[in-house]
Length: 149
Image 1 (cartoon, rainbow, N blue to C red):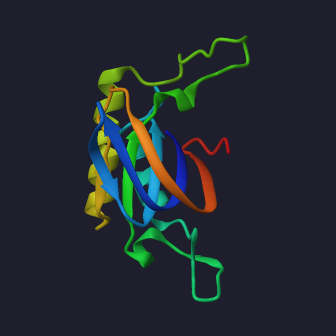
Image 2: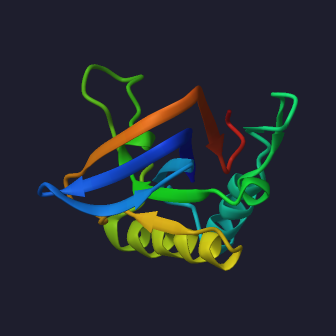
């Protein structure tokens, strides 16, 4: 799995002009599922993300997690994070999971985050979405289950 995390003061995702999910302070997680991922990968990513210390403490240092701040998480599926542009001008998405697996593991990730006590909102899988957010910091972090970065 690959994820782009953005620390936000507020965010929402729109589908056909209607709000599909909305949060206040917390994280927007753009999440891609890879071909080799499984339920354990989804659970591990959820635990890693909600426990990352990327929120400021009283001294302004990034020392607090999403759990510590009682923030929310907006999960948006984004298979394009597996886009490989090394071969030319058109990205290859061969490493992205097929839609059935992608949807199942995206939903497993959301279940795992919710089970950890984090208020969670989502986009709608396999639809065209518009994401609006106010990046806080800005703080943007990349996470990869294979620890490529």
